[in-house]
Image (cartoon, rainbow, N blue to C red):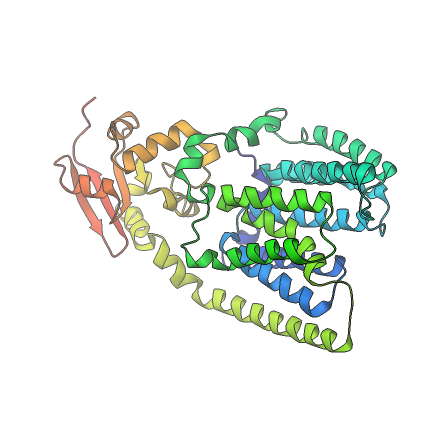
Length: 411
């Protein structure tokens, strides 16, 4: 299912109008805007608040990229900002009804829209608990809860305003419950904190847990549930790290940057903003100047050129999994690409069976009458085809190997 079709159109228009290099710049600006919105909305001492926003940004950086799920991150941040304003009585609860058009848009951009219902549901449950047993000033009152319930009910049906209809209601649960996806794709696995790129996120988690343990006043029921729930989700799957960052940031600001302001802290905060903007400018410059070499180092640029020159681009090609999107970008039909939801778990499992030479690995090559294989040097399938008499190696460079079948497969 092409659940993210509108995001695909949006990204294509950017790439077609401004070039491939514009995609990371545009999505970087969108994510930065989400952090700015949270910084401006949540009261706090400016310098500490800015440090926390910076830490959160660095913490989720390993999972931020020009991909459709970034639309979920940005829209969730906007929902967090709106809810924060309503919980602190700065905005009328009538604005909860913005959830309806937001959900109609969200459902066409990415299937992560249920994060909105989960977030608002936890806020509602926490508010009910506080109204009954607690004393939090940030709990939604009865009027706000009624507006929220009505908006969520209508928003649930706004999901139908997509090409997929009612199928989209259950699709996210099918993905979350699919063992092939969870087992095969790194981003769906639990984070490995032996990876140094995840150390900033580990630090962010430690800062949050210490704050909950020692800072006063402690978070109210809704904040505790939000923090615990999104933290558990992030430890279950790397993919959810960004969601925890967005939802927990206002909580950490309240814990570590209570709302008091001094002239000196404002000066420091302004200085950090200037430095951050300068750093982003340097990052944009780096992307612009190094993008071509980065693409050549990661994707089979020369290998694809060979396919075109040899007339193999129209053959039935079996490609290494991460290279499917690059083949599409070059007008070549891939066997599979990163949009695993378009192919289904059974096809993904069969593809990985072939690539890693599991039992029955050759069945897929025969079934789809594969004529050409574009693979990395290190793929197990590469090592097998090197010694097979029915396959010829016709091209090799530092990154890719191309094989061509020299006789029809045995049925």
